[in-house]
Image (cartoon, rainbow, N blue to C red; front, side, top):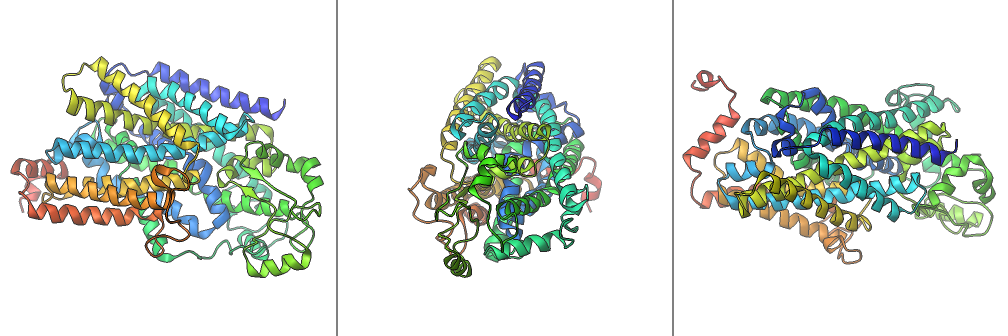
Length: 594
């Protein structure tokens, strides 16, 4: 059976499962559509949350960014896992105790203001739409490769699939679909990693194999990788090279952005009790850790495999020949990925070989001149393809490649569905029912939610055709927007009685607008290419990149909120009592009197 047929079998079987579950668990009421009837078990919810969380950025893109940068991109791992600890400790149980359907509804009631609720809706839609762009980018990459079509065609097909099961299932359908998707994606991620770890280190546990010895050379794997990339003019893999201030701000932005993402927070509204919200977050961390502990090994081992394929006899010998790429089965993956437009090479000096090296490095330029090279000839290697191409690069069995196809799509589609649900809930429940038409019928509200989902899919698909970066980089922008706008409002809403309605609205608007403008200045206005004034290589403020500015935006949000609150009318006593009732555990009255 050829690889294309195997891919179709795995992807087709997984899709049939997802759509079947969505139909079986179809939401019949607004409670089931928004919060799955509040009847989801904590372990089930933890697994669904993990699938909701481990998006195309985690599954498809993160290891690729780590692979080609090394230690400096470990910030993705630190920020995204650290954020879940914040979410579990500081937000999830309190928001569940408040008992509302959406984040915007909490903000509106806590800050006793319809304006605050509407501003929260705007913040949510901006952050979630940016996030969906990253997911649709991953969908296009995955569909493009495994259906052997262009990236654009893959994106359009993926959009139709997302629409099919997200629109009909609601939170109830999405929850049980995401449980199935988690099982598929974690198997698809770890099984190839185990194979490759065994090949390179003899250790079946990738996280341990990363620190083991390279079977062929007998030296530590990471030392071998450092040596080979250094010889090609790249930065050492395990060494810190990036700006430390930007690195700290980026990690902080990812952490507090995680704790402020509406589609993740919504998952904690689906459990029966407040204690279950904490347990859900704990189980989600366990399920997430299985992938996140494996990702560094996937990145490092893939980088070593790629480099050795491009220099099969060592960096002091000849590079791979054009003839080998065309005829040797080991290089079939290059021919296949070239069709997607995400991988390319060119024999610039006509010597029949493809030299892969860092042509910006001065020392390598001297070596290149001496050898007659005229530049790096692996002209395009999109970071988002690495995990999907990894089994092919390592020459693993066809069924593993098919499994990875299904896993990559599961990761992208599960998060896209969660985000679209957050957007539709904001539009139908917070905007239409909460502001424009409070007397809308339940049937009409469900229809409005589904129409809002459809519009969001169209917008995200259009923007996904020209994304502002790789999937994980685009997602990082969404985290920055959530960090700057939603997270401070939630924290102040739960832990401070001093912040009134005026302070909350001013803080959210200040954080959102400043961060959004900073992003647009670097990524293009409304992400339209070539409309930017700066780049992340040469940012506006010192070394602070657009992906790191969310932490600055959050500080601005806090400062403006406290300043405005101090200049305006004090928070009403009944709201202070509400905050205390949410924050203090039931039955703790006697203890808090002393």
